[in-house]
Amino acid sequence: MKIISLLLLLISFNAIAQNTLVSSGNLFEGEPYLAVDPQNSNHLVAAWMGFQLNQKIVIKSVVSTDGGSSWSAPIWQAHQQAGNSSADVSLGFDLNGNLYMAYIDYDNVNFSNGAVICRKSTDGGLSWGAAVVARAIGSCPNKLCIDRPWIAVDPLTGSIVMTSTNAKQPTLVQAPYHPYMAISSDGGANFSLQELDAAPFLAGNAIPQPMPSPAFANDGTFMAVYPSYETTQSILPRVVEVNKTAPSSFYSYQTAFQGLGFGAGNDTLKSGPHLALDPNNSGRAAYFFMTAVFGDPDIAFIEKNGSTWSAPSRVNNDPQANGAIQDLIWADYDTDGDLAVCWRDRRNGVAGTYQSPSQIFCRIQSNQTWGSEFTISPVVNHDSILLEKGNDFLNVQFSNNQLYTIWGDVRSGSLKIYLNRYNQNDSSNFVQQIPTMEPIYPNPSSGVFEVPINCNGQAFKVHDQNGKVVLKGTLEHQLDLSSFPAGSYLLSVGRQQFKLLKN
Image 1 (cartoon, one colour):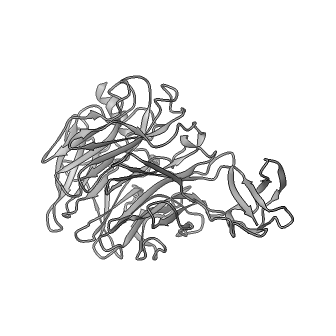
Image 2 (tube, one colour):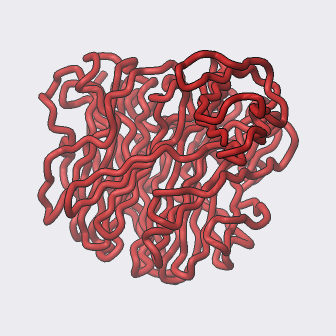
Image 3 (cartoon, rainbow, N blue to C red):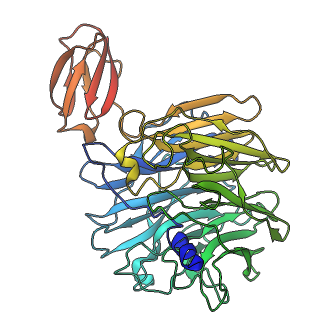
């Protein structure tokens, strides 16, 4: 019975991201990813799944050149076919400043078409090249092997690796299941395909989504970790490390952990694990995951130093088995070897329930010793949107003692993207909401404001500085306040709000 219980935990080990629009008229902007230019740590690019009028969910992105203080207007990527939807974006720079984007574009109703897409930007994310199919549904009949792509870029050679897993569609996907990999050695123009697992380290028939987590070190070492449960290989489930030290070498495999304790039995939790690899020490890595073995859903990790992995350790240090749920993990190493991890935490909310107020907690490990926890967000009330798929990860990037954390937050009444920059040297915090839609312009204006296209046709209200509704109706291409006195106004469109300044 213990083995069966563990198997159920592992089956729910990987939260899968699907495209959903939000009920009650909310506009969905979720699952963000951040890239930091290795040549310029003030150059940031953020991408996420976002709403676009008449387009289902698309991939949007913005650029900052001042460390996140200001951002460009968002741009979005067109679908491969009409009626498709997009999800699961990730980003990676090479050392020459080229930026690569991975995401899926697919028929999310019938799965009649779909692919992992790669796009390349040569101007730092301000514009993107043509879509290249890295892996199509047709490459893996009865597998739907295009879900949850992660991108990793080799700093040494510029090679691109995109990993993926089987989609959570049990009537369409047949065992055995695999972690998958697409590799490009020509700047994303072409990709070769392979399954990442191999005997006697096959993922097996029991875990429908053995999602791999990939990373490169600066010396070109590639590492990925994925779950495995095949009784002909091991009576217990395993977490497998696959390693490749140079382009000409063969992949090597070893068991990072074998036994009980991975995953969470509650399918609502966002339990996707994450591998972090020290960029300057390819023999040092950490794998973060959720576990309930300490009495309730906690954040835990195993750490590799040299050739061996440690036993699991608990990361969050609230009282053990207090009923508080932690999930939504991400971690990264700084160039000096410090390790940071952030997660969503409900210890200051309601014990024992996912539907609880939460905030983002972080910890930093320096010289193999964990520092105190710190928070980078206020306590934010729960919203039903957080129960939906498509909110399955946040993202952390650690560069030059600056810890960047990006996540979807409902504090404004709808799901929006927030970035926090934490300075490890002085513990200062900077937080900003990233613009997820086109701005209203000009602003300030003499009276006529151009309205973003995705607001057209929606009901609106305009409030004056005293909160009085002075205008309401249905938005068209422009909002005309020419007849109103100069001053500040608040435009409400659905659950979004824009501050307008009239000269």
